[in-house]
Picture 1 (cartoon, rainbow, N blue to C red):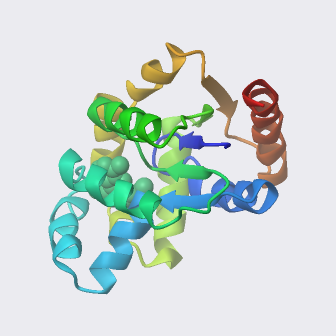
Picture 2 (picture 1 turned 90 degrees about the horizontal axis):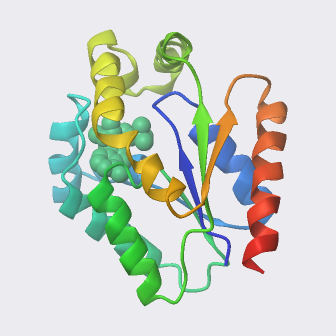
Length: 195
Ligand code: AMP
């Protein structure tokens, strides 16, 4: 199985590149942000809870997020592999994912971390906010908080995968195709190793 953690701060281009990666490698895409947004749209209890955090740019509590992610993996027993997009965002989430995948007889192949400078992130998020309909992309204060939360709680997750020799930093600036080709080069390295 090829299991990828697609990592990077908000606005790094994870969603865009995830779409290209799933098409090429035939993977199941699990974006915790997208799943929360679908729950908000469907007005579920989980959606109501998630919204109260997302509206402030805060993280949804670990236990809720982990249970939801595990349930989504369980819904896809035939998947040839997964792209985890926006998850794990804390060290407890990374530990939970490792234990869960071990119980399924698999593991993360590689973390691909898109590297983009803060100024560029803010520019991209505000542009996206103009037509994505995402409230958390429209407000500069919420954007600033999301980047702060990333720096304080999420960036450290890279160390978890670096310690396992599974961390690849990818330059996230350039054309979509250039960035995609950098990602594919990195994937190929780990695909060979995991065969
Ligand atoms: P995203 O679409 O990945 O930018 O996520 C949007 C928002 O959903 C985040 O700002 C968080 O409030 C919430 N969220 C998404 N993924 C996670 C996660 N793994 N842990 C906690 N909160 C999350």
